Length: 372
Image (cartoon, rainbow, N blue to C red; front, side):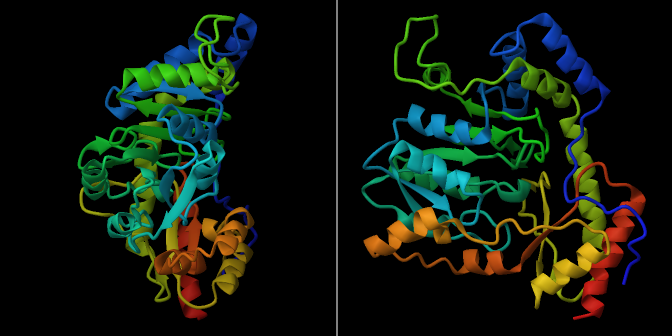
């Protein structure tokens, strides 16, 4: 087994450098710290990553999803089709609007929504489809969009893990009715905390700006019922710095992933697939492990290799969803979701990895095959 004398390699590592620190200090000294010029400039800059769409900054990726659904008019009586193999926030945002969550299965290769499963799940109450670009791999938007158009459905892209990912040249967040991104510290770019909504519709963008700011554009002139989900200028300043870095960071993630693709040879480990025409942003490098996954993870940890399971329990099996569905007599048949939850492990792929780190990870993973 690999030596553990060296520092452990973390599964994720936020990059906060002197430029980000200087930007924060500059904003703090300015006295304009919430929903000010930094936020506006960040929105304008982020638009370049999503084919020029309108961008509305908020305080988290979850808020981005929630407000986009509200801006689209989704609420009680509606259904939204969501993958169960995702972080709970994807479904939570739907529930917070009062709409019902309908779970659909994923495709084995991409871990993203299966278009055939989505079409089979559509009912007269379906109002929207929520593709999640999981781990940084774009969902099959080229097959999902025609389904949505055929049935007159909104498409809400959860791109919280997929900054700069694309499919056939179109960036994620620029396909549907709107897209959402997160800037949580573990994400591919991280503005300390925050989120972004993208949309091609100027009216939706205006509604989003009202919703994030107590329903008002002019102070004390409330037009609708809104919330306080504003982004701080401190976060926006960090985000602006990282806009100049995220493309390079993505390329480094892709280089790291290519190294793993080439050098991981363990017979019980299957690396991630990339669909034709897809630009994978590698938020995670997620493998499938055949056999005793827990033992494999312990072995990796002992070798100093950070690792994690995203996500061990599918959303439909979490208490807030499982118990109501059981009472209502609803049972979801999601075989690929269940299989993925039982097999996946994510390895470090972040841009801070050194050549030595990459080699250590490969050696440790390949030793899993020797010890099966």
